[in-house]
Structures are given as structure tokens and as C-alpha cells.
Image 1 (cartoon, rainbow, N blue to C red):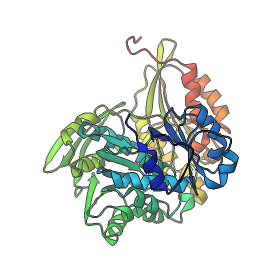
Image 2: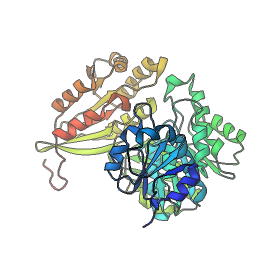
Image 3: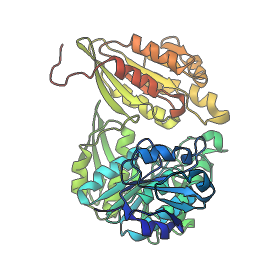
Image 4: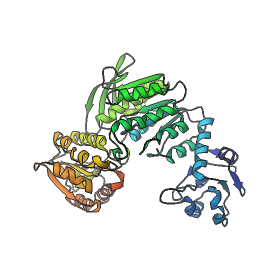
Amino acid sequence: MTFLWTSRDMVAAMAGRPFGNLPEGITGISIDSRTITPGEAFFAIKGDRVDGHDYASIAIANGASLLVVNEAKLPALGRLTVPMIVVEDVLNGLEKLGQAARDRTPATVIAVTGSVGKTTTKEMLRVALEPSGNVHAAVASFNNHWGVPLTLARMPMDTRYGVFEIGMNHPGEIGPLAQMVRPDVAIITTIAPAHLGNFSSVEEIAAAKAEIFDGLARGGDVILNRDNAYFEQLEQAAYAAGVENIHTFGQHAKAEFRLAEFDGAAERSTVWVSFGGETREISIGAPGRHLAENAMAVLAAVSLVGADVDAAIEALANLAPVKGRGQRHKLSIGRDVLTLIDESYNANPASMRAAIAVLAASQPEYDGRRIGVLGDMLEMGEFSASVHAELASPLMAAGIEHVWLAGPEMTALRDALPESVHVVYLETTAELANFVAAEVRGGDVIMVKSSLGIGFGKIVAALLDKYPAFPDTERHF
């Protein structure tokens, strides 16, 4: 059997104390007692809401072969017979194991941060690099103080390319994570007013994102968005951090990986990219100019790490949007089709505008409508009312005539939209979910987007529960 870690190496890396008869090794690492599989180690992390130690027995019942627990919690776990590695602090132990994983692998590591597009860019990198070798990438949006060390600790020794996402809500969070990851290539997708309530300005957000340079490996490469208004600030921060290799992407004439032309369709895109003295036509299996722009950063990274660029271009044609981040569903309403665009995972002003543009490019069928189902953008602080109201402009420019809203902050957008727009406002997500499920009709294209904490995934779930998938093999006109 191939182990992710031997127990001996885990004990050494975490400076832990073995308790009981440890197995020879483990096949994986989990912090979720519900989804752990036989042979994995369960790390009993204490989070903001729950303490993993309280779920140790469930982890054992689901097949955990080893527990990693806090020394102070051991007396309460004494009745459990499964072997354990005892540490002073489980999260710190996970961090040490992640650093050991980074030390033991010869993998080329790429890290992605930015206000918008981190997860999608990470997924594009995964797809683009897979033809060139074993790729280990973060699951979902594991980009915070526990997600990054967990992704590191899960990295197999034979990884060829490691792809990590690094996020933040406050200043000072990216630097320590970047120093754990020690990327060979660092990408900043863009700077935009995300989590603006925790910062005094967008310039401060840019400075926080620039912390990724602190972890860059010696001689590493940085890839920056040449179109972004904060490019020069990031460039100067990179130089100040001692970065020697700065590369650029975007539509700017001086961009090293330049988006020369974009042809967007409802479900995919065709782009022409200029780099290395030639222009290439690329098909991307997902819609949106914002995604095409980030594909330039992906190609830059593929080229810089020496992977197969031609294979990467071919792979991007098969890219599919992920759940909550542009995933499309074709649903049946009687004999007709309803198109659902699921953007329910996250939202800020920049990603809202990008999603509105994708909705505008989508073609309703028959006499169907384009419907924007929008919820609050969280962590906007004192700027909340203005950034919500400002969404009226892109909605009007895109010709979106039906806007259905929920959440206290969306009252600002409700009040900013003109009478020519059919606006429905309901206070809660549950009320809006019931309304949407009842009021959609065949031919509609409906886009659902909000910050995760608003729970608009419930609206998506209500539609998926009520309307079956439309059969691809039989269309009725």
C-alpha cells in the first residue's frame, strides 16, 4: 500500500507524541468527521464554531485509523482505543506537517491570490497542467489559515505541480500562508473592493495581496494583471520584496501574455492570445471575459514552469465551471428549457459585474427572460450602500430587465433601479427561493449570485429539486 505519510514521519514532522499502537501509515488527511474515509488520519482542529475533538468518535466510526489531538484534550479521549498522535496544538501540528510536505517534494509550486478569480484560476491551472504531470491542487476554496496547511499536508511526495490558492479577509493573513507554500510562481489575478469593510481603501487591499511576494522562492516568478489600476503599486511592492522576474497578462499593449481578441458565447469563449512572438487561438470551455483574462495568467504560468503549452491549450477547451462559480444547469419546465447559472458561492462588486456580463451574453429561448437573482455582498462596511446601488449601472447597460433581490443590503440596489426594470424584493433568502421556484418559466436564463453567507445556494437547490435536468438528446421547439 502507498501511504501519504508514514506514522514515523508524521510524529517527527509535528514533534508529536505517539499514543497507542500507531499504524504503519495513513492514506489521507481529513478535518471532517463526516467525510473521512478508512485509512485516513483525523486532525481534531478547533474552529470558530466547533471543536474537532467533540467529533473524534464519529471519525473513528467512519474509518479513521489515526487521530491527531491536543495534549490538553487527551484525558477526555482516554476511552477511545484508536491510536493517536498527541501535540500541543492540532492546527500548529498541521502547519508543521504542511511545511514538511513542502520540504520533501521536488514539485514546482504555483500560488494564486487576488480579489476575484482565485478559485477559477486555480482550477484552470489544474486542468492546464494535468497533461504535463501529477498535479496536486487545493480542494474547493481551501485558501485560509487551515485550508492552506491542509492542502500542503495532503500533497503527495511525487507531485510534479502544486497549485495553491491563498486568500484573506484582513491585512497580515497572506504573508504567513505564502511563507508556508513558498511558491515558485505567484499570480495576483486582480485587485478589487472585496472585503472592503475590513480595509481603509482598495490600495490597502493591494498591499495585503502583495504579501504573497514575501513567500516567493528565490529566483521565482510573479505574474501580474497589467490592466489593473493597481498594477504599478504591485510592481513596486514586488521589486521592494526582491522579486527579479515580473511577468504580465491582460489586454494592455505591453502585457507579455496579451488577450488580443475575445469572442464570447453563452457557454464558452474563443480568445486570441499573443505571447512569445506569435498569436494563438484558444477555445475555453466556459464563458466570460473575466475568465478569458485569467486564462492569460494560466498560460503564463504553464510557460514559465516549462509545462506543455500546446497540451494546456487543448485542455482548456474542456474546462467546465465549478459549483457555485458559474456552473450551468439546463432544467426542464414541461417541454421547455430553463437555464440556471449558479454563481451562489461568493460575490463582490467586481465578480458581480463579471456575472452580469455572462448573463447578458446568454440567450433566452422562445420568449424567455434574463433574470438576475442577486443577494447581499458581505464585508463592504461603510461602503455597502454605495457599492450595492452602483450595480444598477451594469444591469442597465446589460439590458437585464428582471432583477429579483433579497437581503438588507440589496435595498440600496432596489431603490437605485429605474421603473423600467421589473424588480422583486423580498427580505429573506427563504422567501426569495420560494418565489423563484414558482415564477420561473420555460426559456428563461436565471443567474443566482450573492455572498456565501446569504445562503443563495438554497435558491439553486430549490430549482434543482423542483425541475429535472433537461434531456440533451431531445429538444422540443
